[in-house]
Length: 625
Image 1 (cartoon, rainbow, N blue to C red):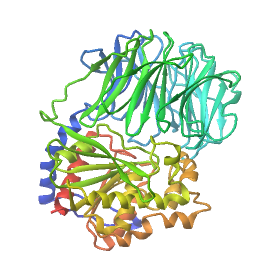
Image 2 (cartoon, rainbow, N blue to C red):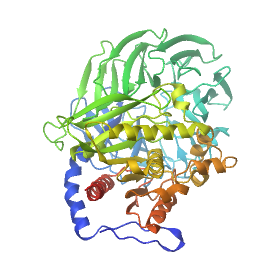
Image 3 (cartoon, rainbow, N blue to C red):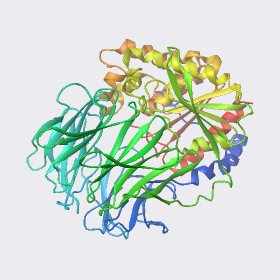
Image 4 (cartoon, rainbow, N blue to C red):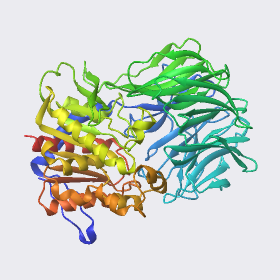
């Protein structure tokens, strides 16, 4: 059985499995490796000649950079001991730039390496910063632009640094509010910044990259959300994905000099969310990704008129168009479905024809299939809670243990997509239910804001509604229902266990928020700033935050709980998880605690995934008998 202890000073030691528990976890490790080793291919870009793809793959246990001819075998570019966050093919065609952090601490740094894996150098070694995306413009190939901030601050600075060797970044513009770089013109003279006071209020700024002068392009007035922004090839037009402060998914074309609207395209349904924009260098096209409820769509649009050319036919699932080849003839798409891992697809930009670059996943058993359906659970106020139900093919008519998995956020989304944990649970005989309670994205501005601040209790009512609905379904064994989730999903798991203990048999909390007042005081500066509107101000709303925190109510937990934390978590620091474990152990509630020493707000490494998923299965197997 697990054995753990509370160390002096309040730190809680994680459990170490021994004896039969360790042996059973080792057995289950063989069961979970199949879905985990069905690797993901993501973050793809074309090489500058358009003949090869550069992408991230988890095939070696962690996101790492690979290169492959379209339809050819993948070759690893660089061997690192840390995860890679993004990759860019830089001008010249022989090198890439990628981002990486240490033990998932989100202090991203930038590196340059040849496509042949040679001459690896760190470009930004001088200061630990939380860095955003990197852009190397064609017209200034020796310069790299990015926004960044200290982890504890929301204040953001736009920097330029050498793109070919380590150097000292030069600050071009500093904003007291969280601001991120969205685009740089091809000539390297103009940039677009998104200022992000909150999810419902964003501003698009035009910045002169020579002088640092800034002007606000959009909106002229009012509060809008901006999901992405890009520049036309000539740098004269800004393309903006926005809701315009309304229930309407919009793509706008704005004059970069004046902010004047030049063209406008509305998408249906109005509650969809336009999440990303990719602009072709040649051919006059834009590829946009639209999130429509729990699935994604890819649209190819004329960059000047915003008239649609074609919709790319992809299977029901989730993904995004990442970029065009330099000649504008091809578009790269990453995509997954509930029973197929994320992979790469090349789309003919003229016809919309899809060419899959689908690699075999031999670790998935032959015929592996998940039946994925979407339902709308009636909410207490007459609304609907869009929900995924996932079960093994042919098993829909039998009662199963149920894992109710809450997404992170609060403004996250449970979409139709591949998730190795879901696959592990379904293979182990569970039905997985993924509710999108109020506050989720993809269903409109009003639905996303419906849990903000003093309306938080309405989202708790949705948690109860989902739990009681599950218990009534023919595929559910109502005596074996388990809430689980990570981050905000972990928070909702704890809310579920403290407020309706009679509904649940056990729980799984992955780095969940426990005490909002302390979490908001110790989390990253960006999270703290953007939480003010959604959750509350720890300086002014302490009593309210306590009232919606599961921490003070842990005395009501009776169900066994599995808790996981990353040692280097900058968002929900480990002491939050220590607090839960200490409180439950003090009351003799069964709890198992796992801490990953080389993870942050993450389960990024294969070794972590195998250990975590096998331990979760063993824990539930023990407590759902």
